Length: 403
Image (cartoon, rainbow, N blue to C red; front, top):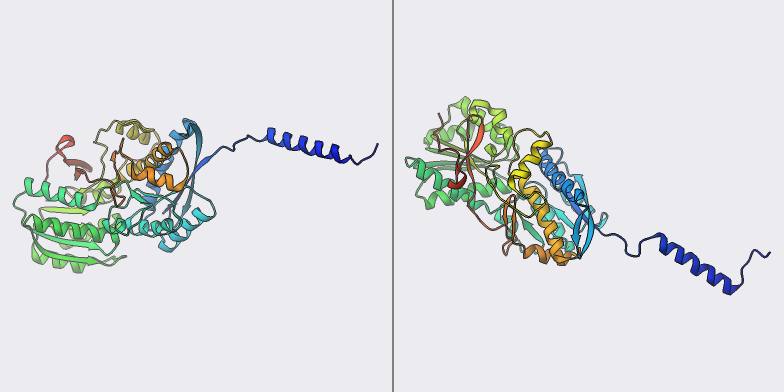
Protein backbone atom coordinates (compact mmCIF):
# COMPACT_ATOMS: atom_id res chain seq x y z
CA UNK A 1 0.00 0.00 0.00
CA UNK A 2 1.25 3.45 -0.85
CA UNK A 3 2.60 5.51 1.99
CA UNK A 4 1.16 8.58 0.36
CA UNK A 5 -2.52 9.59 0.37
CA UNK A 6 -4.28 11.05 -2.60
CA UNK A 7 -5.04 14.76 -2.42
CA UNK A 8 -8.74 14.31 -1.45
CA UNK A 9 -7.77 11.86 1.24
CA UNK A 10 -5.05 14.21 2.53
CA UNK A 11 -7.63 16.97 2.81
CA UNK A 12 -10.00 14.64 4.63
CA UNK A 13 -7.20 13.52 7.01
CA UNK A 14 -6.26 17.13 7.74
CA UNK A 15 -9.87 17.91 8.61
CA UNK A 16 -10.02 14.88 10.87
CA UNK A 17 -6.84 15.96 12.70
CA UNK A 18 -8.20 19.49 13.12
CA UNK A 19 -11.48 18.14 14.49
CA UNK A 20 -9.63 15.86 16.92
CA UNK A 21 -7.50 18.79 18.15
CA UNK A 22 -10.58 20.94 18.58
CA UNK A 23 -12.27 18.26 20.68
CA UNK A 24 -9.14 17.91 22.83
CA UNK A 25 -9.15 21.63 23.78
CA UNK A 26 -12.19 23.54 25.09
CA UNK A 27 -13.82 25.72 22.45
CA UNK A 28 -13.32 28.78 24.67
CA UNK A 29 -10.17 28.91 26.73
CA UNK A 30 -10.87 29.52 30.42
CA UNK A 31 -10.09 33.11 31.35
CA UNK A 32 -7.94 34.04 34.32
CA UNK A 33 -7.96 37.33 36.19
CA UNK A 34 -4.28 38.14 36.67
CA UNK A 35 -3.44 40.50 39.52
CA UNK A 36 0.13 41.79 39.86
CA UNK A 37 1.46 42.78 43.27
CA UNK A 38 4.86 44.39 43.88
CA UNK A 39 5.55 43.76 47.59
CA UNK A 40 8.25 44.95 49.99
CA UNK A 41 9.15 41.57 51.48
CA UNK A 42 12.70 42.60 52.35
CA UNK A 43 14.24 45.95 53.22
CA UNK A 44 12.96 48.75 55.45
CA UNK A 45 9.25 48.18 54.76
CA UNK A 46 9.31 44.37 54.93
CA UNK A 47 7.05 44.17 57.99
CA UNK A 48 4.40 46.22 56.23
CA UNK A 49 4.78 44.41 52.90
CA UNK A 50 4.32 41.04 54.58
CA UNK A 51 1.04 42.26 56.06
CA UNK A 52 -0.22 43.02 52.57
CA UNK A 53 0.88 39.54 51.49
CA UNK A 54 -1.06 37.91 54.36
CA UNK A 55 -4.24 39.82 53.47
CA UNK A 56 -3.95 38.99 49.77
CA UNK A 57 -3.60 35.32 50.65
CA UNK A 58 -6.66 35.46 52.93
CA UNK A 59 -8.77 36.88 50.10
CA UNK A 60 -7.36 34.52 47.47
CA UNK A 61 -8.08 31.40 49.52
CA UNK A 62 -11.70 32.41 49.95
CA UNK A 63 -12.07 33.15 46.25
CA UNK A 64 -10.47 29.84 45.27
CA UNK A 65 -12.74 28.00 47.68
CA UNK A 66 -15.68 29.43 45.74
CA UNK A 67 -14.22 28.26 42.43
CA UNK A 68 -13.12 31.72 41.34
CA UNK A 69 -15.20 34.80 40.56
CA UNK A 70 -18.14 35.21 38.19
CA UNK A 71 -17.42 37.41 35.18
CA UNK A 72 -19.92 37.67 32.35
CA UNK A 73 -21.86 34.69 33.67
CA UNK A 74 -18.80 32.43 33.77
CA UNK A 75 -16.45 31.37 36.55
CA UNK A 76 -13.04 32.96 36.14
CA UNK A 77 -9.93 31.79 37.94
CA UNK A 78 -7.75 34.27 39.81
CA UNK A 79 -3.97 34.31 39.69
CA UNK A 80 -1.94 36.54 42.01
CA UNK A 81 1.58 37.24 40.73
CA UNK A 82 3.93 38.77 43.30
CA UNK A 83 7.54 39.92 43.34
CA UNK A 84 9.68 41.37 46.11
CA UNK A 85 10.78 44.89 45.18
CA UNK A 86 13.05 44.99 48.26
CA UNK A 87 11.77 48.41 49.43
CA UNK A 88 13.60 49.93 46.47
CA UNK A 89 11.76 52.59 44.50
CA UNK A 90 13.53 51.93 41.20
CA UNK A 91 12.95 48.20 41.52
CA UNK A 92 9.25 48.84 42.24
CA UNK A 93 9.01 50.65 38.91
CA UNK A 94 10.84 47.84 37.07
CA UNK A 95 8.64 45.14 38.59
CA UNK A 96 5.46 47.02 37.73
CA UNK A 97 6.60 47.18 34.11
CA UNK A 98 7.50 43.48 34.11
CA UNK A 99 4.10 42.53 35.54
CA UNK A 100 2.38 44.50 32.79
CA UNK A 101 4.52 43.68 29.75
CA UNK A 102 5.70 40.13 30.51
CA UNK A 103 3.20 38.64 32.94
CA UNK A 104 0.30 40.38 31.18
CA UNK A 105 -1.61 41.22 34.35
CA UNK A 106 -5.07 42.75 34.12
CA UNK A 107 -4.70 44.92 37.21
CA UNK A 108 -2.03 45.91 39.74
CA UNK A 109 -2.03 46.50 43.46
CA UNK A 110 0.30 49.18 44.78
CA UNK A 111 3.16 48.74 47.26
CA UNK A 112 3.14 50.00 50.84
CA UNK A 113 3.32 53.77 51.25
CA UNK A 114 2.42 56.82 49.24
CA UNK A 115 5.86 57.33 47.66
CA UNK A 116 6.18 53.86 46.17
CA UNK A 117 2.51 53.87 45.18
CA UNK A 118 3.12 57.03 43.17
CA UNK A 119 5.95 55.35 41.25
CA UNK A 120 3.92 52.25 40.37
CA UNK A 121 0.86 54.33 39.49
CA UNK A 122 2.94 56.28 36.96
CA UNK A 123 3.96 53.06 35.21
CA UNK A 124 0.41 51.68 35.22
CA UNK A 125 -0.99 54.91 33.80
CA UNK A 126 1.32 54.73 30.78
CA UNK A 127 -0.03 51.29 29.91
CA UNK A 128 -3.66 51.93 30.84
CA UNK A 129 -3.68 49.30 33.59
CA UNK A 130 -5.86 49.83 36.69
CA UNK A 131 -3.94 49.95 39.98
CA UNK A 132 -5.57 49.76 43.41
CA UNK A 133 -3.54 51.16 46.31
CA UNK A 134 -4.27 49.81 49.77
CA UNK A 135 -1.75 51.82 51.81
CA UNK A 136 -1.55 55.30 50.28
CA UNK A 137 -3.50 58.22 51.69
CA UNK A 138 -1.55 61.32 50.64
CA UNK A 139 -3.50 63.64 48.39
CA UNK A 140 -0.26 64.43 46.53
CA UNK A 141 -0.33 60.91 45.05
CA UNK A 142 -3.88 61.26 43.78
CA UNK A 143 -3.67 64.80 42.38
CA UNK A 144 -1.51 63.83 39.41
CA UNK A 145 -4.44 63.43 37.05
CA UNK A 146 -4.15 59.63 36.95
CA UNK A 147 -7.26 57.95 35.55
CA UNK A 148 -6.35 54.37 36.49
CA UNK A 149 -5.36 54.84 40.16
CA UNK A 150 -7.70 54.06 43.05
CA UNK A 151 -7.07 53.89 46.80
CA UNK A 152 -8.97 52.23 49.63
CA UNK A 153 -7.67 54.57 52.36
CA UNK A 154 -9.46 57.85 53.10
CA UNK A 155 -7.46 61.11 52.79
CA UNK A 156 -4.93 62.10 55.48
CA UNK A 157 -6.96 65.14 56.48
CA UNK A 158 -9.64 62.95 58.00
CA UNK A 159 -7.13 61.53 60.46
CA UNK A 160 -5.73 64.83 61.69
CA UNK A 161 -9.12 66.52 61.96
CA UNK A 162 -10.41 63.60 64.06
CA UNK A 163 -7.32 63.75 66.30
CA UNK A 164 -7.73 67.45 66.98
CA UNK A 165 -11.40 66.96 67.73
CA UNK A 166 -10.69 64.27 70.34
CA UNK A 167 -7.77 66.06 72.00
CA UNK A 168 -9.38 69.49 72.23
CA UNK A 169 -12.59 68.03 73.60
CA UNK A 170 -11.11 65.64 76.14
CA UNK A 171 -8.03 67.67 77.08
CA UNK A 172 -8.87 71.38 76.56
CA UNK A 173 -5.69 72.52 78.34
CA UNK A 174 -3.68 71.63 75.22
CA UNK A 175 -2.66 74.95 73.65
CA UNK A 176 0.79 74.35 72.07
CA UNK A 177 1.92 71.65 69.65
CA UNK A 178 5.36 70.57 68.37
CA UNK A 179 5.51 68.75 65.02
CA UNK A 180 8.22 66.46 63.65
CA UNK A 181 7.78 64.55 60.39
CA UNK A 182 9.90 62.29 58.23
CA UNK A 183 10.88 63.87 54.90
CA UNK A 184 8.97 61.30 52.87
CA UNK A 185 5.67 61.51 51.01
CA UNK A 186 3.21 60.13 53.57
CA UNK A 187 4.83 61.33 56.84
CA UNK A 188 5.48 64.78 55.36
CA UNK A 189 1.87 65.01 54.21
CA UNK A 190 0.61 63.97 57.64
CA UNK A 191 2.73 66.62 59.37
CA UNK A 192 1.39 69.27 56.99
CA UNK A 193 -2.20 68.13 57.55
CA UNK A 194 -1.68 68.23 61.30
CA UNK A 195 -0.28 71.76 61.12
CA UNK A 196 -3.35 72.91 59.18
CA UNK A 197 -5.75 71.19 61.58
CA UNK A 198 -3.98 72.65 64.62
CA UNK A 199 -4.13 76.17 63.20
CA UNK A 200 -7.84 75.88 62.52
CA UNK A 201 -8.36 74.75 66.12
CA UNK A 202 -6.40 77.70 67.50
CA UNK A 203 -3.49 75.56 68.75
CA UNK A 204 -0.13 77.35 68.63
CA UNK A 205 2.59 75.62 66.61
CA UNK A 206 5.80 76.07 68.61
CA UNK A 207 7.99 73.70 66.56
CA UNK A 208 7.57 72.29 63.04
CA UNK A 209 10.43 70.46 61.30
CA UNK A 210 11.18 67.45 59.10
CA UNK A 211 13.86 64.82 59.70
CA UNK A 212 15.80 63.10 56.90
CA UNK A 213 15.09 59.52 55.85
CA UNK A 214 17.36 57.03 57.70
CA UNK A 215 17.80 59.31 60.72
CA UNK A 216 19.12 57.36 63.69
CA UNK A 217 19.81 60.20 66.12
CA UNK A 218 16.83 62.40 67.02
CA UNK A 219 18.56 64.22 69.87
CA UNK A 220 18.78 67.59 68.12
CA UNK A 221 15.08 68.01 67.18
CA UNK A 222 13.95 66.43 70.45
CA UNK A 223 16.08 68.83 72.49
CA UNK A 224 14.57 71.75 70.60
CA UNK A 225 11.10 70.38 71.32
CA UNK A 226 11.89 70.14 75.02
CA UNK A 227 12.95 73.79 75.11
CA UNK A 228 9.59 75.05 73.78
CA UNK A 229 7.56 73.00 76.31
CA UNK A 230 4.69 71.82 74.10
CA UNK A 231 1.44 70.41 75.44
CA UNK A 232 1.26 68.07 72.45
CA UNK A 233 4.07 66.32 70.59
CA UNK A 234 3.10 65.02 67.15
CA UNK A 235 5.47 62.85 65.13
CA UNK A 236 4.86 61.16 61.77
CA UNK A 237 7.13 58.50 60.28
CA UNK A 238 7.42 54.77 59.85
CA UNK A 239 7.31 52.27 62.68
CA UNK A 240 11.05 51.77 63.19
CA UNK A 241 11.63 55.55 63.24
CA UNK A 242 8.89 56.08 65.80
CA UNK A 243 10.10 53.31 68.10
CA UNK A 244 13.62 54.73 68.05
CA UNK A 245 12.44 58.30 68.60
CA UNK A 246 10.20 57.30 71.51
CA UNK A 247 13.13 55.61 73.26
CA UNK A 248 15.32 58.68 72.72
CA UNK A 249 12.53 60.93 74.05
CA UNK A 250 12.63 58.97 77.30
CA UNK A 251 16.42 59.16 77.46
CA UNK A 252 16.35 62.95 76.97
CA UNK A 253 13.39 63.61 79.25
CA UNK A 254 11.23 64.93 76.40
CA UNK A 255 7.53 64.61 77.15
CA UNK A 256 4.13 66.27 76.94
CA UNK A 257 0.62 65.51 78.19
CA UNK A 258 -0.23 64.27 74.68
CA UNK A 259 2.20 62.34 72.48
CA UNK A 260 0.92 61.26 69.07
CA UNK A 261 2.82 59.05 66.65
CA UNK A 262 1.44 58.35 63.19
CA UNK A 263 0.89 55.49 62.72
CA UNK A 264 2.93 53.61 65.34
CA UNK A 265 0.24 52.48 67.82
CA UNK A 266 -1.82 51.11 64.93
CA UNK A 267 0.70 48.25 64.76
CA UNK A 268 1.17 45.64 67.50
CA UNK A 269 4.93 45.82 66.83
CA UNK A 270 5.00 49.34 68.30
CA UNK A 271 3.67 48.36 71.73
CA UNK A 272 5.65 45.12 71.77
CA UNK A 273 8.95 46.91 71.08
CA UNK A 274 8.40 49.77 73.52
CA UNK A 275 6.61 48.12 76.44
CA UNK A 276 5.78 50.80 79.09
CA UNK A 277 7.07 53.59 76.82
CA UNK A 278 4.18 52.94 74.44
CA UNK A 279 1.61 53.60 77.16
CA UNK A 280 -0.78 56.48 76.41
CA UNK A 281 0.77 57.27 73.04
CA UNK A 282 -2.06 58.22 70.68
CA UNK A 283 -2.50 57.75 66.97
CA UNK A 284 -5.11 57.58 64.23
CA UNK A 285 -5.93 54.76 61.89
CA UNK A 286 -8.20 53.90 58.98
CA UNK A 287 -9.66 50.75 60.51
CA UNK A 288 -9.89 48.88 63.78
CA UNK A 289 -11.03 45.33 64.65
CA UNK A 290 -13.51 47.10 66.96
CA UNK A 291 -15.64 48.20 64.01
CA UNK A 292 -18.53 45.97 63.00
CA UNK A 293 -19.53 45.96 59.35
CA UNK A 294 -21.75 43.46 57.57
CA UNK A 295 -20.97 42.96 53.91
CA UNK A 296 -21.61 40.93 50.78
CA UNK A 297 -17.91 40.30 50.08
CA UNK A 298 -16.02 37.02 50.48
CA UNK A 299 -15.66 37.61 54.23
CA UNK A 300 -19.21 38.73 55.01
CA UNK A 301 -18.38 40.74 58.13
CA UNK A 302 -15.60 42.38 60.09
CA UNK A 303 -15.74 39.60 62.67
CA UNK A 304 -15.33 36.92 60.01
CA UNK A 305 -12.21 38.68 58.73
CA UNK A 306 -10.78 38.89 62.26
CA UNK A 307 -11.62 35.23 62.91
CA UNK A 308 -9.98 34.21 59.63
CA UNK A 309 -6.85 36.14 60.58
CA UNK A 310 -6.69 34.47 63.99
CA UNK A 311 -7.24 31.03 62.47
CA UNK A 312 -4.03 31.48 60.46
CA UNK A 313 -2.08 31.66 63.71
CA UNK A 314 -0.97 35.25 63.09
CA UNK A 315 0.18 37.27 66.10
CA UNK A 316 -2.22 39.74 67.70
CA UNK A 317 -5.09 41.35 65.82
CA UNK A 318 -5.21 42.43 62.19
CA UNK A 319 -4.54 46.14 61.65
CA UNK A 320 -5.56 48.63 58.97
CA UNK A 321 -2.85 47.42 56.56
CA UNK A 322 -4.28 43.90 56.55
CA UNK A 323 -7.85 45.14 56.23
CA UNK A 324 -7.23 47.71 53.53
CA UNK A 325 -5.15 45.28 51.47
CA UNK A 326 -7.93 42.69 51.51
CA UNK A 327 -10.45 45.41 50.67
CA UNK A 328 -8.39 46.44 47.64
CA UNK A 329 -8.76 42.96 46.15
CA UNK A 330 -12.45 42.93 47.01
CA UNK A 331 -12.75 46.13 44.97
CA UNK A 332 -10.98 44.46 42.04
CA UNK A 333 -13.25 41.43 42.30
CA UNK A 334 -16.44 43.50 42.41
CA UNK A 335 -15.29 45.65 39.48
CA UNK A 336 -14.67 42.56 37.35
CA UNK A 337 -18.04 41.10 38.28
CA UNK A 338 -19.86 44.35 37.53
CA UNK A 339 -17.96 45.00 34.29
CA UNK A 340 -18.59 41.43 33.12
CA UNK A 341 -15.21 41.65 31.45
CA UNK A 342 -11.46 41.67 32.08
CA UNK A 343 -10.97 44.50 29.61
CA UNK A 344 -8.73 47.01 31.39
CA UNK A 345 -10.74 50.09 30.45
CA UNK A 346 -13.99 48.43 31.50
CA UNK A 347 -12.38 47.39 34.80
CA UNK A 348 -11.24 50.95 35.31
CA UNK A 349 -14.72 52.33 34.64
CA UNK A 350 -16.31 49.81 37.01
CA UNK A 351 -13.84 50.74 39.76
CA UNK A 352 -14.66 54.41 39.31
CA UNK A 353 -18.37 53.69 39.76
CA UNK A 354 -18.09 51.32 42.75
CA UNK A 355 -20.18 51.87 45.87
CA UNK A 356 -19.52 48.95 48.20
CA UNK A 357 -20.17 47.98 51.78
CA UNK A 358 -17.29 45.72 52.81
CA UNK A 359 -16.04 44.18 56.05
CA UNK A 360 -13.48 47.04 56.03
CA UNK A 361 -16.11 49.71 55.63
CA UNK A 362 -17.52 51.63 52.68
CA UNK A 363 -15.62 51.89 49.42
CA UNK A 364 -16.70 54.78 47.22
CA UNK A 365 -13.95 56.14 44.99
CA UNK A 366 -14.19 59.88 44.43
CA UNK A 367 -13.15 61.85 41.35
CA UNK A 368 -9.43 61.65 42.13
CA UNK A 369 -9.58 57.93 42.92
CA UNK A 370 -9.39 58.20 46.72
CA UNK A 371 -11.91 56.50 48.97
CA UNK A 372 -14.49 58.95 50.29
CA UNK A 373 -13.71 60.59 53.62
CA UNK A 374 -15.43 59.19 56.71
CA UNK A 375 -15.12 59.25 60.48
CA UNK A 376 -11.90 57.41 61.30
CA UNK A 377 -10.77 55.71 64.54
CA UNK A 378 -8.55 57.52 67.03
CA UNK A 379 -6.57 55.13 69.21
CA UNK A 380 -4.33 55.13 72.28
CA UNK A 381 -2.11 52.44 73.78
CA UNK A 382 -3.57 51.49 77.14
CA UNK A 383 -2.53 48.38 79.01
CA UNK A 384 -0.22 47.34 76.21
CA UNK A 385 -2.82 47.39 73.42
CA UNK A 386 -4.46 49.95 71.19
CA UNK A 387 -7.96 50.97 72.32
CA UNK A 388 -10.41 53.17 70.45
CA UNK A 389 -11.14 56.70 71.75
CA UNK A 390 -13.42 57.72 68.88
CA UNK A 391 -15.79 57.60 67.10
CA UNK A 392 -18.35 57.24 69.84
CA UNK A 393 -20.05 54.20 68.31
CA UNK A 394 -16.95 52.03 68.88
CA UNK A 395 -15.29 53.92 71.75
CA UNK A 396 -13.50 51.66 74.24
CA UNK A 397 -11.89 54.24 76.54
CA UNK A 398 -11.13 57.95 77.04
CA UNK A 399 -7.97 59.96 76.43
CA UNK A 400 -5.28 59.63 79.12
CA UNK A 401 -2.34 61.97 79.66
CA UNK A 402 1.18 60.66 79.14
CA UNK A 403 2.92 60.20 82.50
